[in-house]
Image 1 (cartoon, rainbow, N blue to C red):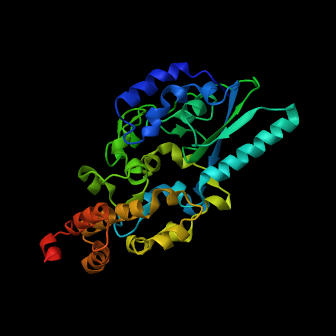
Image 2: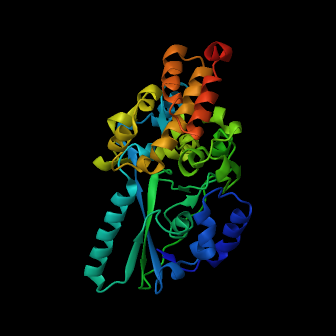
Image 3: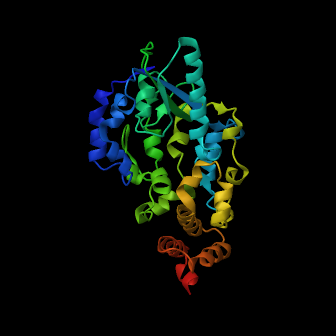
Amino acid sequence: MAEVDLGDAEDGLRAWLEAGFHGSMAYMAAHGMKRARPAELQPGALRIITARMDYLPESRGDDWQANETARLARPGEAVVSMYARGRDYHKVLRNRLQKLADRLAEDIGPLGHRCFTDSAPVLEVELATRSGLGWRGKHTLALARDAGSMFFLGEIFVDIALPLTAAAEPHCGRCTACMDVCPTQAIVAPERLDARRCISYLTIESDDPIPLEFRRAMGNRIYGCDDCQVACPWNKFARRSPLPDFAEREDLADPSLLALWAWSEEEFLRRTEGSPIRRIGHARWQRNIAVALGNALHAGEPRAPIEAALRARLEHASPLLAEHIEWALSSAPDARALSA
């Protein structure tokens, strides 16, 4: 349970925005300090109930961190962030928050409330920290001693002054594993992320060309990046989700790049129905995979099938996709052979 007064978080938020670390996410700047002023988002709110929901699929097993690291070394495989391998969490968590609010209203009477989960200008990690769900890790995500960081956050703004809970104490100590492992060095300081360098931002939020300086670092990551979480020692305590909603879809559990590249737009929409992946659209999906295929060529994966797949799309590709395909084709150890 957290207070609605987040005034002392405004300076940090303002500095982050002024540094341009939000990149092309214009909505971050548009809402400005509203994120630190919950009462403006929900007039009459007096308290904020925070909740977390584990999402690590049961199928990943006890060695999931080692297994996820190993996948990055297999350049022909496609790596999708674990949170996106199942159903879109927004609907799942929001429905559960609403059920919680309904039960609370049954116990205490009429309750003015509003539920959120990554769907409005809310400082979710700040609220989670103040209400005791966890502390802000150096990678900027919420961390808990008994659950790591593999969970979603949600909030219920209420108009009743319910008892507050104690804030969480940080337990990162001197560890910098998350900062050290980041492929693009996007964690520019403890608890400070430059989204413009983050692979999650580049593959999901940005619809611009992937900057040349980050394409090699993307490797085979085609949607999001879990490296900072995989490296975090606290995630050995990450809890498995028993919900079928977060079970890995067969298409996304251990896919090859070429299999996903072959999806038409119609097939992409069908296979990503109910998935958070659908929001990036087929064009960005192909842009990301083109970069990963280029990295696979660079790493020495069999040339012929990758070259054929890329060239088959080149003639009718948009200028954005064509640019990434051409970059990919130039990535083989002997690019002149490809262009001959």
